[in-house]
Length: 260
Ligand SMILES: [Zn+2]
Image (cartoon, rainbow, N blue to C red; front, side, top):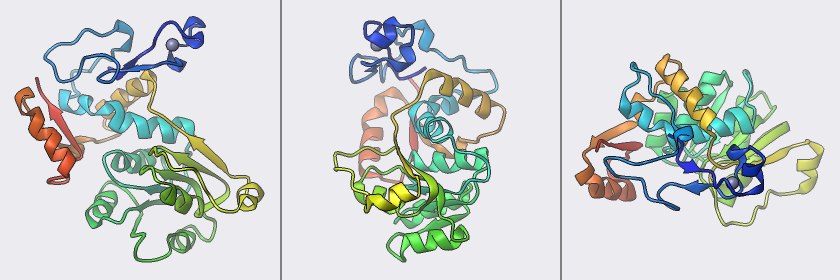
């Protein structure tokens, strides 16, 4: 199911566009519903799980896969043959690499200071994995895109330094997509570069239910393999241990699935 519910009271909800609710309520923050054996949810938020799709795989599609999917495919309209750079190969970034691969982006360039994260990016389909501490990332990106720069650069971290580095790698008409969020003021260097090259900055949050429906089809028909993202499954009584493991990054987990 989608992790939020529309308010049914705002202007967009009243106009019949609950997907664009102005006061979307998120489960776990605005109302109870996580980490329980049963939960009552609005019928319209449910997505059926086909028999051939294991529960554990369906469970991680919301947010961890659906957010980068909606961002890359819809918000940034990534097309086959476009050069894409992805900054931050954590729980969202690893799926962003897979989605870029599925869409047919080329080349796919992952950027992450962590060696394990770079290895993960290469394992799931990145063409190159760059260490931002080792060399000037903008030079490396130009070298790997025949001097053209990126069509799409994605900040999955949420830090202005990362966003600015991603912006410096954009080519003509390049789009800069913010999936990671931060309170930093946005500063991207000389505006004349941004303007002359007709570049765009795109904010992004979450996904709509139709993205989840599409992902269920893609995963259950073998177009996208998320089995490697399920680091562990655990019963409900062990959820505290799982939260600690995520907080300390012990064993570098991507997603932990609770089976109540
Ligand atoms: Zn609303």
